[in-house]
Amino acid sequence: MSEPRILSNFIGGAPAPVHDRPTLDVTSPRDGSLLARVPMCGRAEVDLAVAAAKRAQPAWAKTPMKERATRLFALRALLLAHLDELADTCAKESGKTVAEGRAEVLKGVEVVEFALSLQNLDHGASMQVSRGVTCELRREPLGVVAGIVPFNFPAMVPMWMFPIAIAVGNAFVMKPSEKVPITLCRVAELFAEAGLPPGIFSLVHGGADVAVALTEHPDVAAIGFVGSTAVARRVYELGTRHDKRVLALGGAKNHLLAVPDADPDITVQGVVDSFTGCAGQRCMAASVLVAVGDADALVARIVERARAIELGGGMGAIIDEASRARIVAAIAEAEADGAKVLLDGRAARPADPALAGGTWLGPTILDQVRPEQAIRHHEVFGPVLAIVRAPTLKDALRLQAESEYGNACSVFTTSGAVAEYVAEHATAGMIGVNIGVPVPREPFSFGGTKASKFGQGDITGESGVELWSNLKKITRKWEAQPDATWMG
Ligand code: NAD
Image (cartoon, rainbow, N blue to C red; front, top):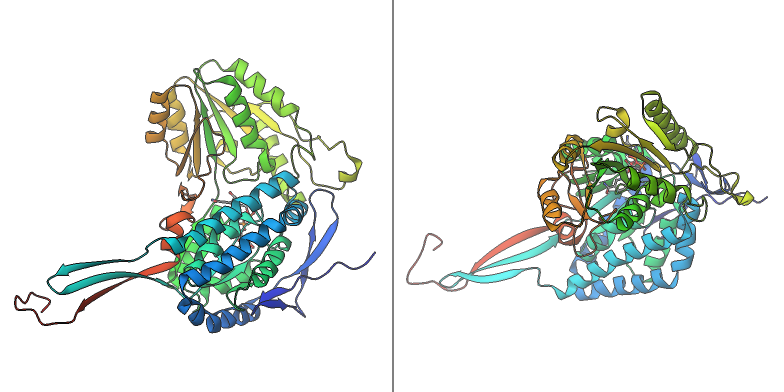
């Protein structure tokens, strides 16, 4: 068997091989096969990437927006031309299904489309504010900016950040997740093929060392982070201590509320797709179902639908054995603490023998979870649904509000009044009505509240433009005016 390749960084518009660094194996969670080795870089490689970015950025900032957008048009075309390949790579390294890989690349393409559409928007403003005096607003890039991303969306989460940041004139240095670094290597090659000037998009592989080096680097102006809450908080504190702009998205514990008037078909589908999609490894996944009133029939149908999911084809794998062990331990703890296991995925394995070496766990449903149980509060990040029974909608909303996290909350109802009540009172950044995964599509921005986000604004949409740029205000006068004001 030939040795797997060692991934290169991408610096100055070309692959930059790394020597003399330890490597980690990148294995496929689907079948355990070794896909590549990733070098665990450090400050030296970060310095190289940031220096190349710093050299390239001023010319890119001076390039007219319409010209910058042509590189994004070309990137979009290449991403679509290579969609099958990217979806496949993404699925292999993250464990998700190829259909899910495809969907995430397409969602990333949507952000590229938003970014290239910025050329058609007027980002400044100009107004005569006093006689003979004009004020003008101008958007300026920040310089070199950086992103640190999680394992669960190898393509989409990075694409929340760099298309917008680059469109507004920055140079971007990305640290891929060391667990899923391969898809982004291909995206970087495609961006170079799209004619992006060298140095404007770079990759440095590694883990916390690279993330910390980027977050402390004096020439990095802003950090976009997506990952667990513990690390998000740490990166936010470190970055702001180093006077950087930081937006750090963290973990989640999304509560779905089902009220008695809910349409059973839409509810069953919405809840099951939400907690099993990407094997529950989504920050928007349903984690707790608060079933209001007598919901036994609904719960039975949820169990029946989840039981029918075929591992491998219908649902992907868990990222690694450590994650699987953590999820299994959380299920066991909840069971020992009184939860009733309605569906147990702990021994489930795919029928396909080719997937025998993968990291598998079937959908698991726990009923009669008490509000104070750990499984209702801690992020499990796996295909596990904890069902809590509540007598009224107000009780359900009180439970949701208790969560330290505030990413998403959905309600299943046929009543507009109930939907409106939840939209007003739920303490989350993204609200769904009869939608299990209420991800806003562009141009609506993505971002939660509470411990799901540290920093101002959101990561995509117009908020992304705010994140990666500054507003400069220019006030001009060319002639002396007879009615001189305080500005005279
Ligand atoms: P993680 O926090 O372990 O890692 C995220 C990134 O941080 C990785 O690139 C990792 O190398 C780096 N990192 C790890 N330890 C670090 C440290 N001490 N200092 C600096 N950087 C460090 O997250 P993960 O396991 O890769 O991803 C899963 C988590 O991401 C879940 O909690 C999930 O909810 C969250 N997530 C959130 C969103 C969102 O939009 N809010 C989206 C996707 C994933």
